[in-house]
Length: 130
Image (cartoon, rainbow, N blue to C red; front, side):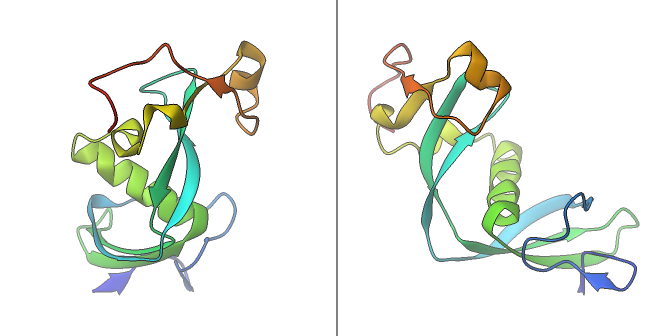
């Protein structure tokens, strides 16, 4: 299988800022390491949660021409690949919460600046801890 790339540049690591990836039917085939990350999603606007994600992943997919490719990623790119493939499997980031105490409600000003933490969000209570 080839690697996701732009002309002459294989996609590894964080990728270049602004690089666009087209992955058809992506699947995570390898996960390495673990780290806690803050994540949010437009599926649950106004909230963020602290969840565990793999530090590094390898994904297989097809490019826009149907050619099989693999992409190795770490850091934010690895997190994005996991987040988006979760969506394809019907999973949202809050399904990964260890505890509802790790879900935060953002203040309106923080919704404009996603780098700031909000207050704990006791308003969202599901069937207990995830």
